[in-house]
Image 1 (spheres, one colour):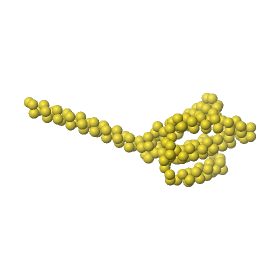
Image 2 (cartoon, rainbow, N blue to C red):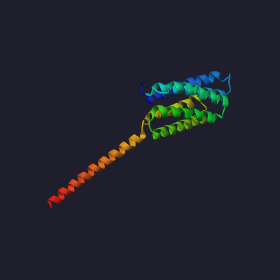
Image 3 (tube, helix red, strand yellow):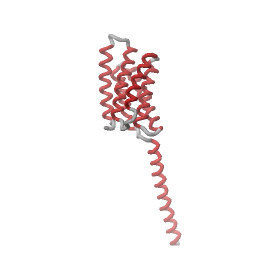
Image 4 (spheres, rainbow, N blue to C red):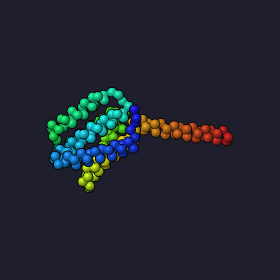
Length: 187
């Protein structure tokens, strides 16, 4: 299985933006904006989840996720929550799937949650300032492409840095100790 890269994420952002904007403008005369936004979120979210699952090294639970995502989406369609809650629940679902399939530490998972919230903020900012569906989807997925920069295990990395710092300290301590012994033996 191929591990996702930033450039692949940029390609996903571009394709999602193009398809999303084409769908939005081609269906805008048939449906309301609220309906179309929810439809785009559900469709693009599902396709993005399929992309993530195809790039994950884990093999367990993928069919369950493929069944649970449409059920989640369908239940949200039946409940019809406010659009902000609809978006946030889809974002939480993406975060949970990435946390389960790409990270092995809580710190990495929390970093991904922060990235998800930032991507929503950037997409809202783009929508507010430009009014463009294309740019909103582009900005959201462009920030999402940065998830590949989050290490699998942030805790392990911080422990390694701490161990390296301790090793350097012990080497310096031993060097200083041997220098003091040489000085005291020469006197």
